[in-house]
Every structure is written in structure tokens, then in C-alpha cells.
Image (cartoon, rainbow, N blue to C red):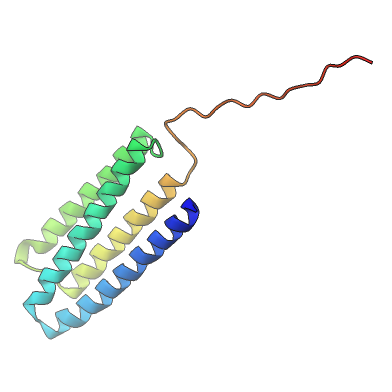
Length: 135
């Protein structure tokens, strides 16, 4: 069940990114300012979702401290890139394309590390029991 949830979450995110990306490119070509605001909301929503995924991974022991640190560094890099892109007040189609590619890469990396079977929780040891009955 968990695996199906991960797949559907990833599919929804990928679909959302595609819709946002293609919809925003069309709106940027039309040069209408309200679409930039909507795009900014979606970018922020994706970033918030990714931050929550990282924190949930830490809380559940699915991410090691090193993995979480690396993912947070990626998130800060994306925020810095976005800030630089927004210096002129908005994001154009090219900037959005680059930003969404980075967000998709970050989501893929989060998903990969959440599923890599490296955990901060100790797994129970399995001992082989040998039957030592004598005949």
C-alpha cells in the first residue's frame, strides 16, 4: 500500500509540474501578469511539499542526518536560484523551465533517498537457528 501511495504521489507531482510548466509558458508568451503570481504560488507550494517530505523522512527515520542535510542544501540552492531569477520582479518561461527542472530533480532525489532502505532506526537482527538434535 505504501508503495502505491509513493507512486501515485510521484505521478501527481510530475503531472502537476507538467501542467504548471506548459501552462506558465503559454501565459508568459501572452505576457499577462496574473499568471506569474499563480506560478509563484505553485513554485512555493512545491517547495513547501518537498520541505515537508524531508522533515517527515527525518521524523520517521527514513532519512539519515547526512541525507537530510544534503536535501536541505539542494532546497536552499533552489531558493537562491529562484531569488536571483526574480530580481526583475517575475519569472519568464526560460527561468520557469530551469526552476521546474531543478524542482523535479530535487523531488526525484527526495524520493530516491526515502526509498533507499537506509534508516536511522536499527533493524532487528535475524539469527539463524540451527537444529542440533542428536540421533
